[in-house]
Length: 247
Image 1 (cartoon, rainbow, N blue to C red):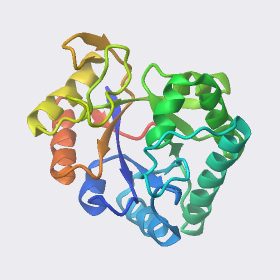
Image 2 (image 1 turned 60 degrees about the vertical axis):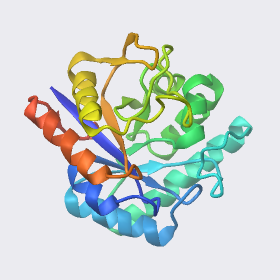
Image 3 (image 1 turned 90 degrees about the vertical axis):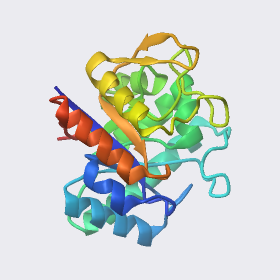
């Protein structure tokens, strides 16, 4: 059995250097919600030096809201901004002798595309246009995963060990009860259960099925490095190989 462990990085608010040694994929901010060319370059260098797969983490253009505010864009505009961000990081990586492995949308863009097929299709088209070899990360069971499959992309169904789930498989909104899990032992148990059992307990106590190809560790969570290390150790101890889906 194998699974990917990914982290959102390059956002200048998390412990990238502490988290990166434990993950297999890095989702690097492309400047729209966080990051800039200098940060993108240094984060690519960090990932490259550790053998971590490099991915683009595109967002709505919303630095003030950290990309977590929903915005309404036409599908053509959405496709353009996603392609632009992927292309920007691809150029930075290429200049350093590396290439992109995957794409994972950020924040509100990710959550909206999980339920909106038109948005999901626009994102998938952008990825396919820039580089059809890239893996598209999307919430397990979401429209984004389905859209990637429709255009022939490889997809990775993502789960979140440190986030609460609703019974319909969507993430509980931040700020609501149970939306963010902070107990390390609980997160670790949840990660292993997701990987081995393909299931998760929701905020109302029911159990739902998920497809777990990749598990996200948020780099800006307090104690993220210790959490990432504990999750990695538990997965390995359970006989699960941690490897990027793009490799």
